Image (cartoon, rainbow, N blue to C red; front, side, top):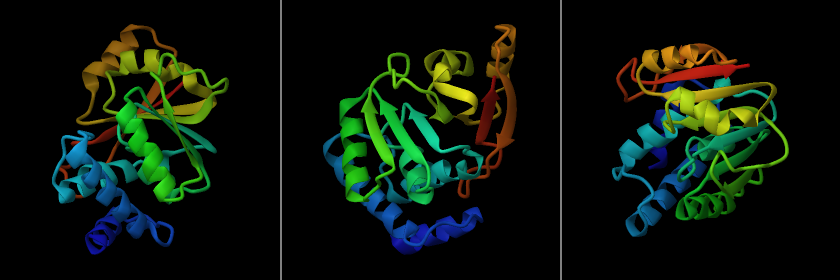
Length: 207
């Protein structure tokens, strides 16, 4: 498994800390083990987990900004856990309303010794940490207009909201513009090895 992950990481063309492949391997092992008992993800095949959970999370690593990151609707910890593994200098808060998924995040973070991860059970609308975040990120959580309703208020001054999407979300961007939203946007295509080109994009929103 670790050999396969090392090859997958190499295909991203990014540099990662020593021990990254081993930690990611442990994460996939635990996800697979828990998934047999509690339904955490519809993805069952381990190779598909590497592509759709690990690589799909790590491609956004160069886009993160600042010291504090909020992962809204993290599910069983994606993209937050892989990003926290490869960027130990940042503090990650992983947020989800599903108890079993947050329990898995807490377990995985403890097992991997991720002191830079905090797992919180709450809906994005209801979460009240008392401060903003340098980066807020969400993967396939909701359409862009709804997404900024759910979590836009968590973006700190000069912060960025990264919405991870599939194909180019032209219709969602049009809807956002019709609302006369205070958010400006840029769109970056993400190249995830193993997935069709053009199938992943990141929308970077700024006030």
